[in-house]
Image 1: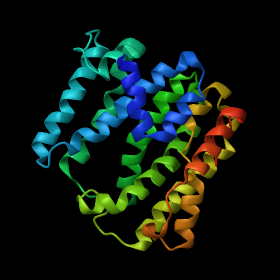
Image 2: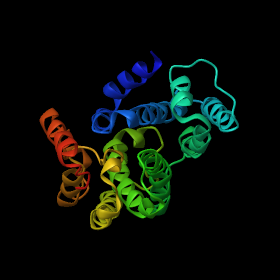
Image 3: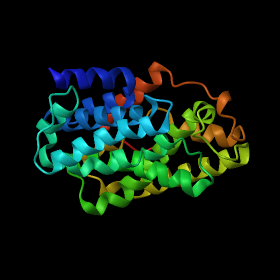
Image 4: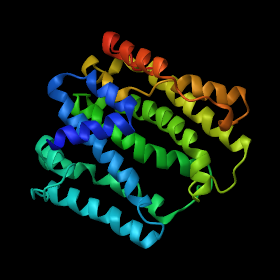
Length: 255
């Protein structure tokens, strides 16, 4: 029952990853569902309190539970942690860094420069994508391509959210179109690198590397529009379905 709850949360809150999960082999889906459901909870935890100390405490609860699982202690019954334990077992302990990466959100720290944004994206989006890729059999040799793909996809997602993040003190300390364009170029360069190295990734792992519908087009439009995020349309349901259908039919994850 709790695996179904995770899947429904994913369908409602992260439709791209939900669709990519459905393109995976049936035996691989429980690990993806629970990983992505955990990611939703970790992303939300720092924002469940406006007080940084309380937000940190909420995040620490997740860190402690994951660490205990890594030591062989089953979690208390929980809609996400119980199916995560069933699917990942001791390997759930390896997911602690995904929670640690969210401490910045709890502290409400703005990003001083491009390097700080890239480090955050690599730790969050990069950590999730690498865990998913490993769960789907990606070899260690694929780590570079996974990291590049995650940087590009994660940067696009972060930029989409930037207007809201600015209002919460979690955006850029010095906002401006030049800074946005520099981040966009870092994202597009990463996607290009991943595309060039795509043959390293086995077909089975393709769903883990799906960048999200319209990612490449979104970044290209930001360059064209001089970093104007507000001018970019949302991804249409048709475009999302088309991208996911291509993934399922051809295994093409790159953009």
